[in-house]
Image (cartoon, rainbow, N blue to C red; front, side):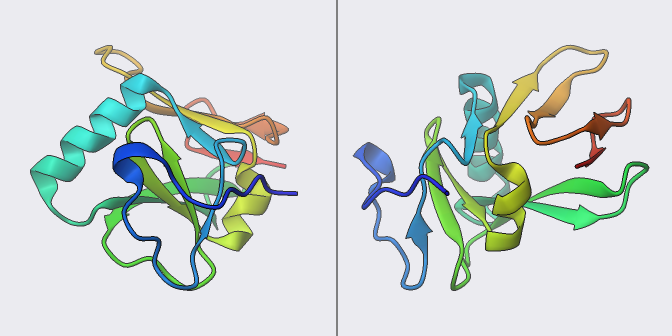
Length: 132
């Protein structure tokens, strides 16, 4: 069961596109550091107001995380307002992502975005692929 809510609150309360459901942070949550970095990238790159997180086949453990900015939500997407940004997740990805935390580190070694997924049984050393 995915935690859904009726509407986002605060500055993220922009109109929810038709066919998009609002989901809570039980699906995916960004830490304040990750939210700040995503917000800065959205402002700088102007490629879209939403961060889309997807899981695709590939990588050394079978599944890999993909992130990109988009301005076009799709019918069936789930919108998660978290850490000051809006995240889109498709229904298939939601099955694998539930409970995941996305963090960001400014460290020079092993810095960048890091997924902590409670559904992953194994992950590679780079943290970009996993298996369930």
